[in-house]
Image 1: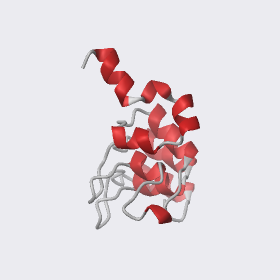
Image 2: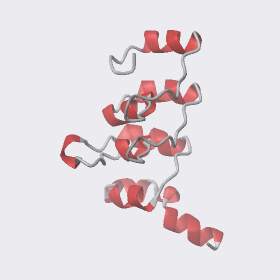
Image 3: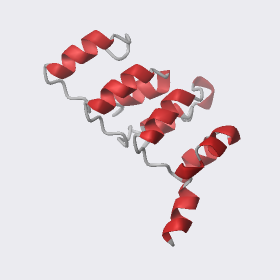
Image 4: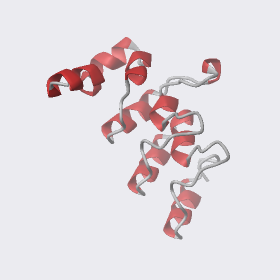
Length: 124
């Protein structure tokens, strides 16, 4: 349903008890795919269904990592601003590698998510 971007089928499957955190053979969830493809409505639906926002793929990568356009094959991914923003606002864990990969203008707009600032503010 997520790959075909079919919101009605996705809603139906979730209503019928589909596991929002089920994974494929690479341990990627529907949220990973929606973040990679920049499907904001699907991301919202999955988060409302309690998708694990920090789930890790086989390579140890989160949906935020995919939204930022990162992958072992960088040329095949792109920065998905709306997906990244939704994940940040929903509480995705921001690691230094995520922060460093964000375009400067996006970092400026979202400075409150900077892991370095968070650590210094907490006295860590």
